[in-house]
Length: 303
Image (tube, rainbow, N blue to C red; front, side):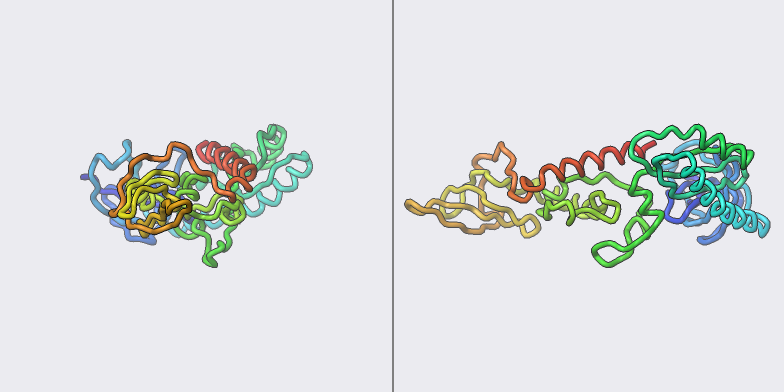
């Protein structure tokens, strides 16, 4: 067992574990920690606790000290400098006529580096911009491209549910979401209805996916042939959460439909061909483009 604390460097950023050594801290305290990029100012979100060794990614970096008033003052000065650097960099981007949008600036606590975050379609040759910024600030300059989901997380806003965006309140990491999730949850396949403020698939599609996958494993797919108390028929639709099946049954020369609990039917033959609904067919091109953008963003976010 190791004694650890969890800290964040930015609001809603990832939580990182550090070795507090002899220090006892509480949630909301500020500390100076040792990182691969030098000293950093961080907020404690998980106070001292014991964690099994196998849950720790070694080597564990150290907490250097509790933040002093001088440290806090320097941190606040860095935040002021970031606003000035944002304005100056935006002007330089216009001067160089670069197709990129500056979204945020981050001053490292030890003044070793300034990071400029931006969004862009494709690759950008920003070498001349870096030279200009380095000449002004006399320190190391790094430009980092981020995805549109990261951009919206930094800007903030409210979702279609009326609440503040998940990425601005509690999501530390963006998990992969896909069109397949919307299909499995019987959600509208209209891109405008399943996309968030960022123009990408809503993160909340992921929340109930595990429950849907567990239920779908017990249910036949649409088009499957099943045996019911009223004879053999074809699955017409599925109510996943209720675990009910609507079956199309032959009645003389015609057909009738009836619902059954999954426990009342036996699967004779599973459908081999995926059924494509009219809404999916109608929005096929837009859905493919959305999936493509989603995959491209994933690559940028992993950089």
